[in-house]
Image (cartoon, rainbow, N blue to C red; front, side, top):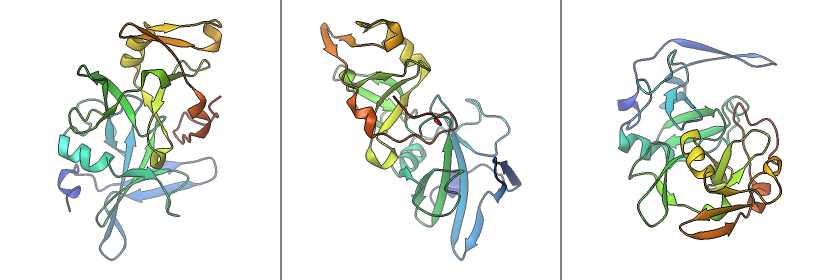
Amino acid sequence: MFLQRFLLNSKGQCFFSTPSRCLNYVQGQEPEPKIREYFYYIDHEGMLFLDDSKMKNFTSCFKEQQFLKFFFTRVKLNDTERYKSEFPYLSLCGRERNFIRCDDTPVVFTHIVGEDDRIVYNHGEKVLITDFQPHKIYMNPDTGRVYHPAWPKVGNIGLIRSKLSIELSKHFEFAEGEHKGPSHIRWKGEKLKLENEWVDQTQRYGLHSNKPIE
């Protein structure tokens, strides 16, 4: 299969501890004929790894652009009964089930490109790109993390990675004080009021998303 050709050589058993039980899996396991299962992790910078990789850094993450496009365009909330609480997201690719857990959100916006307000996600360069909506940026005043709208199938929300968040924060204005979060953003010569109502309709199931967005 397409994804299998890009996988690292990892066939060892992994044990994943939760408060209620110990979960074990094997990369590439076959729970039923002709169905294979793999397990992934997405960090807060938007990099993709095999979940059981011991070293998670730029050297060990997946970088091949067509693979990233194939994988991330299929990411959705896990609507199966398999590993749903531990791996709340899923990317189905033919007969492969790719279970995903993440630091915060599976979609992570990484940088803005061009003059027409386009934003790249999960290091997809030109293959994973969507419209940038500066008036809908949301900063959580408790954590300082910054978010941008995503798609319903992934919970309607994506994290903005820290490097880009710092750049965007230079354009924030705080009409009610910094403890309330930004109220406006100055973007391309315009002062835009931030519209944050959309966050009420979002879902996040990352390792650091156990508090509701307020």
